[in-house]
Image 1 (tube, rainbow, N blue to C red):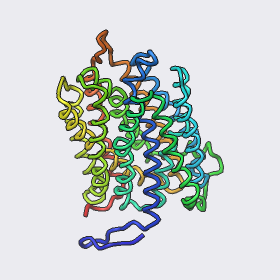
Image 2 (image 1 turned 45 degrees about the horizontal axis):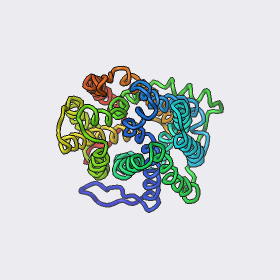
Image 3 (image 1 turned 135 degrees about the vertical axis):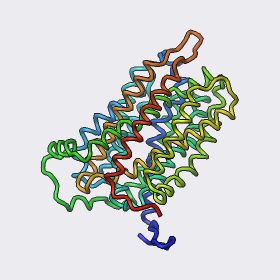
Image 4 (image 1 turned 90 degrees about the vertical axis):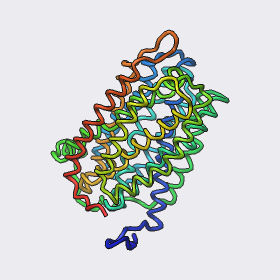
Length: 414
């Protein structure tokens, strides 16, 4: 990597290959996140088409999370015993197969099975991506790395969700899943042929037993607080996002045709916000950035979940500000977490974290489905209750992040 002078301290600059890795990982994350997110805006179409209730739809969302949680825990013992590139390709192939099953599902039970298969493979990929990013980039650069990778979330809104909704509106809800296959397959081929092996950790001493490797990772005292925080961070997304489109259509009164516009504009803003948040994390401190994001999130969740019949532009503005808050929590927290495990346990730590995150997300989605009530008129009641739960969990997360921040020898803000 190169350095450039920034004030009195040298600033680390990405090498050409590092830029390639960041781009590939971001594109890969785009396909993974899009597969997870696409089911949320399709909820308003899938529930009447499959004749299912909000509780059943919540189960369809959480089934992905529960299976991802199980596979992450099972993979943790082996996560540091292989070249991370090969591990990534194995799970990515399984993810493509699960997405294909979603595109072919004709009934609710078939959809459940497809989401379970997709979760078994897709849920582990994020942990492998984090391990690769941690292996290849120092802590001083990881805020920017997570910022660029985080733009995959926004890109899935700018490009993926509007396109997915367009396909669904012109064909049916199966079409977006088939489109994801067409987008995701090239990313896998690029990784297979052009990405270098990521195997430096294999030169270090490894535990012989995968089971003991998992148990030692779970029992490590330094990891416990991070694991608890990992379970709390995804609560908001899993509770609010699966029912966001139904809330906008049934409660706020917007039409289905306006949803692509909302996701498009929100995504355009967050595409630029992600890298800026990453740079702010490296420049002003990751914990300071997380504090800002939490405060903004608390305010915007309270506003979002209590909206009545308002105009499209009010919804867009609130949605944009909410996602700025979410990004300002997600990116610095991921960067901080990467500094906690040692090299030989990075894969296991990230796999366990992903597992706990998915299980917690699945519980959150199931709880959200149980809290919400659909009236005979098709209106969702108690959506604001979800907001109060999310705000309480976000406040607790801020407190715990303070103690995690104290464990990380983060360089002083520049």
